Length: 242
Ligand code: NAD
Image 1 (tube, rainbow, N blue to C red):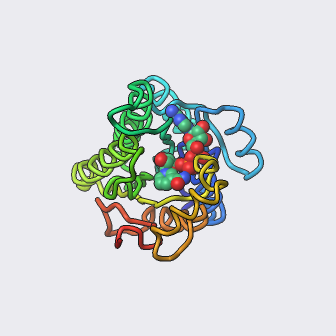
Image 2: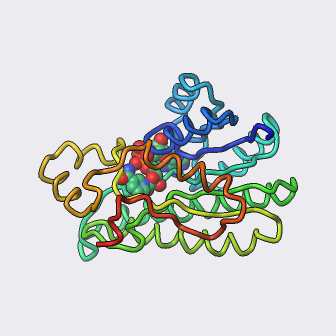
């Protein structure tokens, strides 16, 4: 099989970095696309990947980065919409509107912009590609204090279904992976707090918070699973069963 060009947004840290490593280990060519240009450069150099600076929430930045990648490396075969953030937390009745806006801007608008531009690029290039978005089980199971974040993940699940339907005639598949809590820089705060960590673990039937290595194989699977489209696959140690 030909080496695929895989773009991983937010690939300079956490889940994105682990996904980039897994695609590289599978022999694919990976472009780490991140708003943190220095980290993207350093991680790409360390892993043997390519890198590009982009802000997924800015249409001009997205268009420029996608054109640059296509010119430099050829048509994009796989997009991993991984970049995202919570940006803070708190009860909805008390949430800072700036935290809400930033979260919506990056997670929802950013995932839309990437899907829009790369989807159009794949159609124009005739690439029967795959898009995999990192959602969250929070889209389906609420945790107090994360309502703003979880709503953006419900939104990307809806985008995944719509894009899957619209892009199916072009042979392009669109899916999501929905992790429960994963040990990354994003969750370092609560993972280091024994009480907070125990509270999370008590909700997970398999009894532990996931590592990045638990999530990456699901992304690789959906990037290659030729007859699956429009799903959001939980990787949650069974948490949605509770
Ligand atoms: P992380 O904070 O470790 O990494 C996020 C990366 O995204 C960083 O490199 C950051 O620079 C980049 N980024 C942020 N805003 C960006 C933008 N506007 N444009 C481009 N890049 C941007 O986070 P993580 O824990 O690895 O999370 C990755 C994804 O997984 C997110 O979408 C997150 O919502 C989702 N997720 C995480 C968990 C978890 O417990 N860690 C659980 C479920 C889902």
